[in-house]
Length: 271
Image: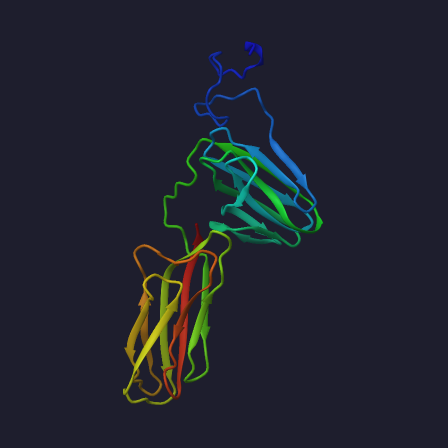
């Protein structure tokens, strides 16, 4: 290849690194991978050539469609990848710092999404469902690390559930999306009573889709007008659900006559 067709670094040498260089250097190739997507299965594809991270900028003033992020090893067969939403505003609602399996746009949207792409040949952003409008998608790949977080990933989701007296209360965490798990940061279960209840039985609070059939056994005695905290679970490291893209439940057992339950679960989703 002739020297004048190569991209050169600041010292006149053939550029060997990633397009995102450090040290203040710039390249002479200003091309950007971008496309306007406005139909079912319209896509923006990026060849990675050894890059480890891909970032997609998504913008639209009017659209009703769904976007997914996918990757391929052989260049033909693609499978879904979760993306970390660095920032996203959907219909004027700002949501960030969480994993998403897709981007569902109903009206306006802007967002910046990062995916781990190490080892893949190509990645793409594709319209998986389409009603109307179009979206401008711009992509960039880098040899940089995917995600270095200097603080714990925050809990961005919460479910609270209650029920009538002497009825089990179930908090259901909906399926997170393809390849995504629930990461639980806290679980609390409490009871309150409008009349006294003698302690003659054991209550068993149960869960589904958590490791080891997670459960708690407690006595059922209650004072009139009293509140009993049965569970205040706050793990040092988040508890990961057992199966991806599956609902997780926390069930507070029926507490007896005149006893009401409350279940609170805080969590985030991730790969």
